[in-house]
Length: 353
Image (spheres, rainbow, N blue to C red):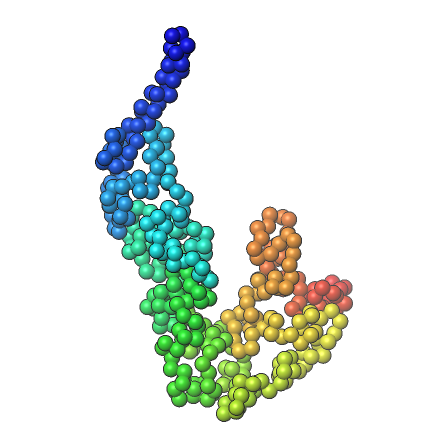
């Protein structure tokens, strides 16, 4: 008897806790304890505005949350996105195997774009229309002087929100998208392109979303392109192979930039320049970057040059890396093509300075 009584006394506090926990053991009206909103009545008002998630509308908190009893906290019953796909399974299956998932989708962050309980916009989006896109994407890129018509109609005119098998979440290939609106086989279209039968590579010359130039041309256009002198580099428009270039590789560039050939043959020249690989860094037709570079100057060098302590994908501790290097300002100290007199490593100042 003494032993049994001792055991009972030890178990009594555990039983008391379990009894108290059972008071909030169920969020369902069928449960023996309190429903969630019996204690959290303020949530009923807070989560009834705008578009309301179905479990919230049904006051079925237990659909997503674990019951917590006296231990506070709104704990989910499963992590995202597993929890979401319990109901939205068809969507989850449609995302499997996509070549290009949207980054938040790839990271399982449904709540990057969607609210959990209620939202101001359809689909429980945190903002309506394109505003949700601009929460991550720089609005200025889409708001220059001349705006592409599809942009005014909304991002989903051309892009999928969750993922796509085409680059940059496109609904179709770039060429197919352009040709939905632009009749590339028409005489008018070809006349605007020097008579050349263009059907692809529209973005070599044109900005996709907006531009400060006419015809949505990119910010920096190669002089022959700007003048409509395609024949400076290509065969005649009526030729059997109209897009064939009139000379190979750098020989074509030196047709206009001939004075650079001897410069690039000097000691210490940047290998792409010395080897005539102009296209390693420069676009042929147009670019959004000065010097018709292929990408942002702060990132371009890192395509070839990899460093242990700094780079575009690295977080650098203040004071450990030279500021220009940390900010991708390579040209603050280095020349792009050849070094200054008496210098190596493409340094900008002459050796005596």
